[in-house]
Length: 98
Image (cartoon, rainbow, N blue to C red; front, side, top):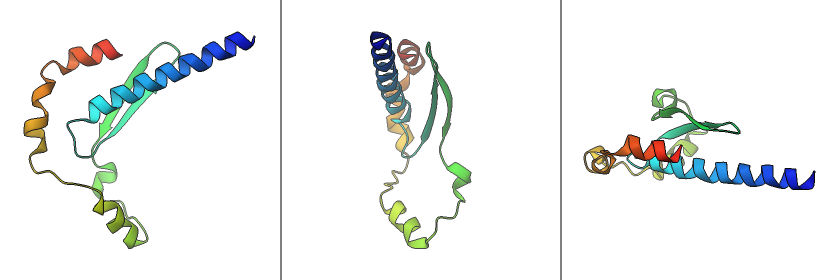
């Protein structure tokens, strides 16, 4: 029984690491994105990429927090033109991970 629990924990750790690798890869070309992934005991599923939750219109209060969070965001004009070049074989790469 103890070995079975240990195996399940190892499977969860492997899946978690695979999901982290995948979300880092999926988010690489963007300056900000939330990546939704879901896992079952057999697979990792892609949900969506969310670039601006609530269309960027959420209120963050107090307002000083809004400015604090915003101070960490480095906006890179036209970031997608250079960062998308390595993604010509992207779908094939994702298929090998998932």
